[in-house]
Amino acid sequence: MASAEIVYFDRPGKHNTEELIQHVSESIGRTGIDTVVIASSTGETAIRAIESWSDRCKNIVVVTSHAGFTDEGMLEMDSETEQRIRKAGATVVRASHVLSGLERSFTRRFQGISRSEVVSETLRTLFGQGMKVCIEISIMAADSGAIVCGESEIIAVGGTGEGADTACVVRPSHASNFFKFEVREILAKPRSRGESGY
Image 1: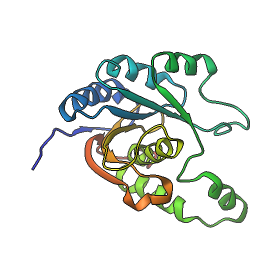
Image 2 (image 1 turned 120 degrees about the vertical axis):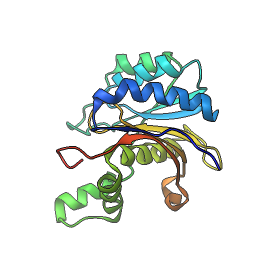
Image 3 (image 1 turned 30 degrees about the horizontal axis):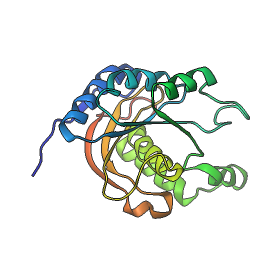
Image 4 (image 1 turned 90 degrees about the horizontal axis):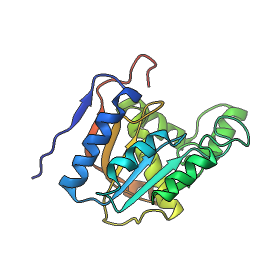
């Protein structure tokens, strides 16, 4: 039997970022896990995390939004920030969001909802946006080859909107083996989804 401290934030959002980064740093030391996958649209959260974890963590993978996520053809993370992250020794992954991707186009055009969007909405509703993000970015990192699947565990860090408010230890999988994915420990999460419902 193992025991560990779980941090529960009063409400979701970026104001939890610094405390979450510190808690993940302590969790890296406790678990010995040397791979952390973190969501960061603009790179701001990733840079703050890298500064804290780089001496304790062998592999930091930053998963950012795909091109055109907010505006067609545009990148949320500018090239200068991406270069800064890479120079710090982290890997940057930019890929279609595995829990929406192509299926979102069909939903917009024909209405209804796809199976992967049901999974996404279920995770978001039951566990919060940050947990959904942790699971999604872990799969995106695995499918890009930035992390290894199997029995190795990683720490995944996500958030609600901006910043970071959720972290968990997972056994990642590829999208094609989604049902092999395991959330093994919850390190931190908001206690509620907040006023927006997410």
